Image (tube, rainbow, N blue to C red; front, side):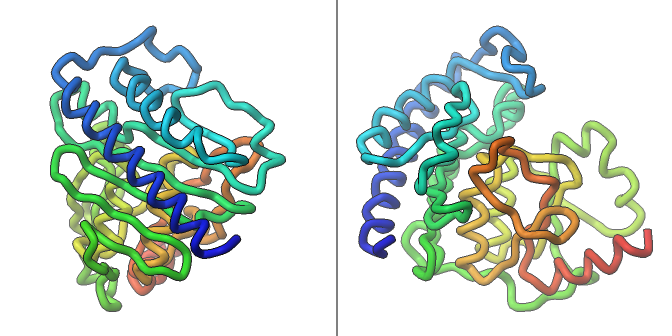
Length: 263
């Protein structure tokens, strides 16, 4: 695919993310769940998620020949035959917002033959816009970003899931190393990409829309992204699930995998 075409589609994705963030900012005070866990995923769905997805779909739908995979829509498996797929989470961090914790992002990736080639993560509460395209570098509000320069895990800055901490999943790590907590998987990947933290990880399965945009942004910033076992993450699969995640500056990820072997 021509670099210019990817750049044009990234511009479209950034337009869609900005429009969705505008809606989220306007509607956040009226957020409410819709029908509970209506799709069996265990994830809450709200009026704001659905409305944000509608805004994004209206804009991205103009990209001819690009399929659409979103947390808020029934899966159309015709995407499996498409070379290009939008992978969208219109509101990553819904649980945070439902508890009054303002940490959530819009996450949009363009996937080509299983690999993210462009992505944008926008935070409606901080004004941060992270973006990247394949072989084009990664950016935060237009300024180039890079992961932290080879900091080892032992001295590193670790950021993990606020939700997982509340569920007791992280208890086994508490005596091994210090970590901070944030909501939103995509946002944690973005703050690793810009060097604010050195590593984030989760043992739990994630959906492709949680990680796709963060994947290309972190890799273009010089980072490394794998599943929890260290394998390559492939996107636009029939079952769009990622088997855990390690997103790091590279060195911290290698150190963490050695630590896991000794647990």
